[in-house]
Length: 82
Image (cartoon, rainbow, N blue to C red; front, side, top):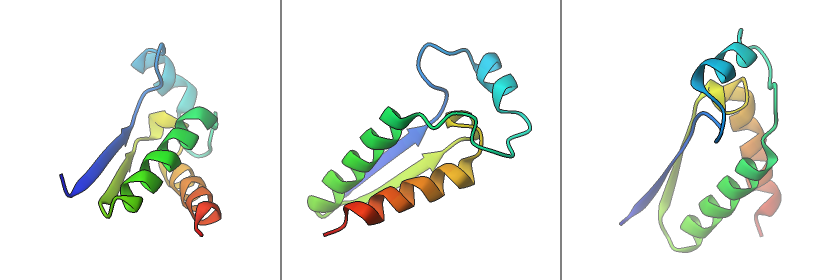
């Protein structure tokens, strides 16, 4: 397959409603979910290393604020570039 797609949604073992309530009004990161972020960076780096494009779809439920989560992932990816 020429690309990888990752979807960061509701964390495991948490209900949609609980995460939604915790994240509202989606104006800040309410939890960093460091393992998910590390795993995402690892998978993106693996894909790129295999000459595949990587697309990461981030939902507000995966931390509270998708744009800020994306920025953090971008920073982490830039830090791992060689």
